[in-house]
Image (cartoon, rainbow, N blue to C red; front, side, top):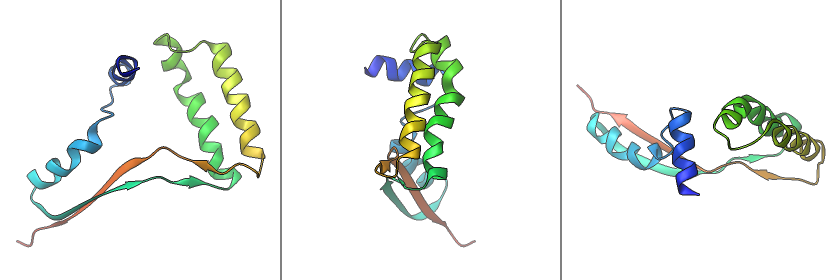
Length: 107
């Protein structure tokens, strides 16, 4: 699984491990009181939940070109996600990410 994860990062020109590096990047830039937090948004409303299927459609061509999914699998996934969006019984925890803040030093 890790190899697929790293390959997808390479295919999308993305660094999925940037969160682990942010603290040092902020420190190197001279920020003080650097404070990292792990955040996990909860999607409650239909508008918020729409991010799921919209995001799947957005990355579909990359997933297909990388050989991770077929168009049929994407279509099935998007349709399933749309069903979850319309169902108020579902509370969706979005992916966790690292949020980091710091203060600029005074001149």
